[in-house]
Image (cartoon, rainbow, N blue to C red; front, side, top):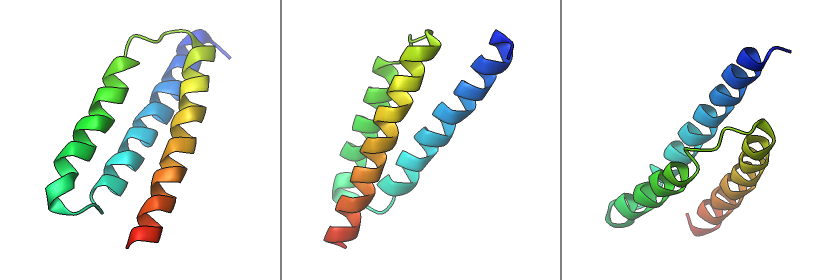
Length: 78
């Protein structure tokens, strides 16, 4: 697989993960939604400079686990 294609695929996965977090954040009450959205944005901004495909894959894996945990928390509280 060419590096350009790999980068394109990883970028799509990152965007999909980000959108997943945003979808789950919509389920929070209005008074905490802004804080949650700020935290999500901050975490993605911190890792914006990652260009190593292995580091990005690790961050994606970690992000997916965090999203799964967030979904679980939301399900328990709602």
